[in-house]
Structures are given as C-alpha cells and as structure tokens.
Length: 250
Image 1 (cartoon, helix red, strand yellow):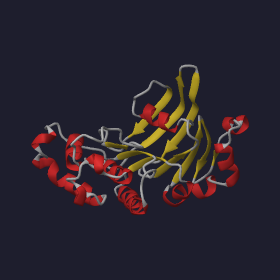
Image 2 (cartoon, helix red, strand yellow):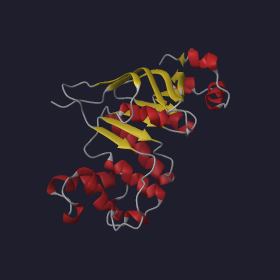
Image 3 (tube, helix red, strand yellow):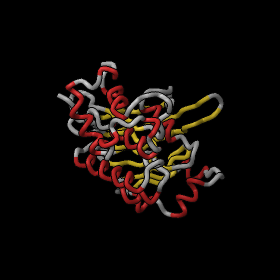
Image 4 (cartoon, helix red, strand yellow):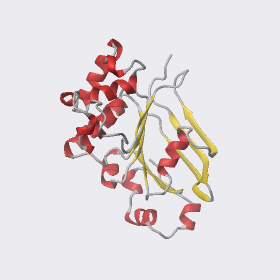
C-alpha cells in the first residue's frame, strides 16, 4: 500500500558545513503533513542547502525524518529554480517530459503508459498547445511551467519547490496558485522556497524565516511582521534572535 497523503517532516538540530563555512546551524522545524510550508530568507541563508540535505545530496549533522502516513514512502516531486540545458538541442517539450518519466528513449516517443498522464500535466499548466515546441524556444516562464508539469508525474505526495515563481508571468502565477490548490486537495505536503513575501502571506499555511538559523516560525500573517522581516534580511547577524527563534502558535 502506498502512502495516503503527504508526510510530516521533522528537522532536528540540522547543521551543515562546507569547507570552513557554517551553512546551517542547529536548524529545527516541523512541516505539517498535507500543508503548504514556505521557507523565506536572504540569498546564501541556507534554504536550498536544507533542500539538498533533505534529498540526501549533502552530508549533514542532526536528524531529518520523513513521517509517511502509509506503510511505504510515497512519491517526491522536485521543481528546481531554473533549468540548465543547451538551448540549441532539438528537444521538444514532449521529448523533455518523456525523458523525465520513462526509460524508453525519447526518440521512440512516449510509451502508452505515460501518454495520457503527460498530456494531462501539460494541460494542467497550460502548455499542451506548445508540446511540440523546442525547449530552447520557450520563454523562461514557459520553461518553468514545464518544470511544474514534470513534478506532477507521477502524482506526488511531497513536493519541494525552489522559487518556482521566479520566472512566471501573471498567467503562470495563476497556474501555480491552481497547482497549490490541487496539492492541498490531495493532502500533498508542499515545502516551498520563495522570495515573494506577499505570495507567501496569501498562499502558505506556515512560514519559517531561515538565515543559517531559524529566526521565526509560524502562520504568515503573524510571523511576517516588519521587525522580523527586517531582522531576517539584515546584514547584521542577530545572535539573540538566532539563539531563541520565535515560534508562533497556529
């Protein structure tokens, strides 16, 4: 039996060092199962590094636990901030989707198993009409929509989003908001790195302010006050707040 809904995630005293630099220092927070949890903070504050630690891509100290509701782990989807590839490659949107979901060479086309799910995912992000367009000919926002589409196959129980709105236009942002509503309805757990604090306030259930250490954690309307945001993005390191992060009741 597969997991029914997404997992809760527990980060307990997570620390990460690269060379002589402490990237993460005693990071502890909890992501609620089936919720939309945003991570905000300055560039270099450790948000993407926390993702990589969760995915097992970098060694870390402390404990990270995925608490799945079923007997076995579910499906994890990941949307990077940008897609790095050779724009001159003759790879269409459909080729890219095929490469992401099947072992069969894309030159042979999509297998019968994946044809309908890929079509549905591209429809869901508004990219079906451009399925045969070359990836290199797409705008940055269109490529971001394709990345969102690939995270839908197979249907994820946990989605990790690394600044997914960074290249989206207004129509793309509406698509993204519809996807969040879709994942909420499925009880999919969403952990979301974002710099747009207005979007976080509107769309997230909970937000954590991270600048190498957790500075605050709580519902966005309560947590994202001007003093806390100023402290989070200030160049001056605030030892007192870092040692005693503010946790606000839901």
